[in-house]
Length: 163
Image (cartoon, rainbow, N blue to C red; front, top):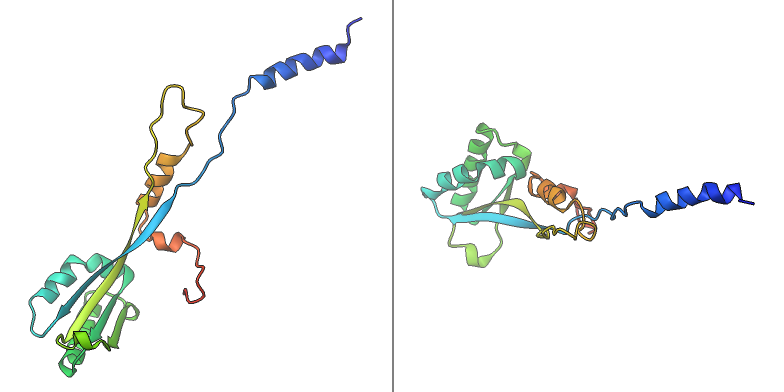
């Protein structure tokens, strides 16, 4: 006699044996690098406006730090802060501070701003027989990380002095 339970189980086993194995999705390896643009000047200098104009989008997004090293530099730094607020930069993102480095006392001010950029791993090429062995989502994840405006905000803050 034929066991009907065993006969019903055979097609189920055959169908599950033909199921495709789906690889786990793994994230990309991403490195976020700070890129700092800085300029040290003595008054008067024609390079200040060129620096501000060429890095204005970074100044708007991430702020600016202005250090002064002389009394002339302190007055000039306050004037630069007024000009930047007139151009639309938030006054809380403009940091004025006295410079302490003795090597920089030949300058009146230094101005700097920091942008962040990402570098992602290169995705492997898909081969004809390598579809199951190639990790999926590499191109999508890399494009997502490369198109972020503020990639540093996606990172977890692990240091105790991180704000």
